[in-house]
Length: 121
Image (cartoon, rainbow, N blue to C red; front, side):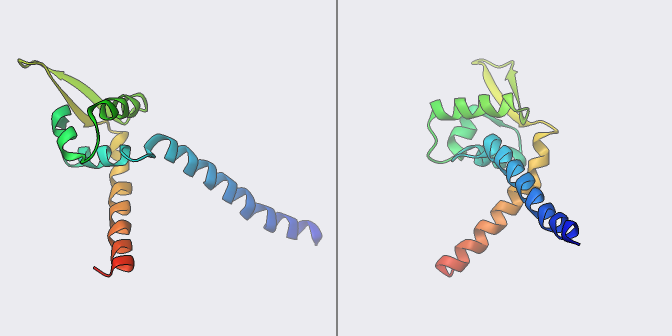
């Protein structure tokens, strides 16, 4: 009987640890101030570097470049050099990156509800 209780108590603890590890992995990839905003912009359409710089309010060019490289390294976005004069670079979500669309919508919904809860608007 004691062993059964140990298993039922141990299982939720293992599940919790497993979930926390997965959350940490997720936050390592999309965490920080800018990455999820960049991904959210690219959920709507492919964008050039200058468009992203304009849309993600407050980000500097240096930080945008770093975040784009990191997102590309994690296989979430594609970088395409366009055959234009001057040369332009366009970014898009990879099929793997598109798996974040639902998450960005969920985060946005939660944020709107949170704003209503805190501010009352």
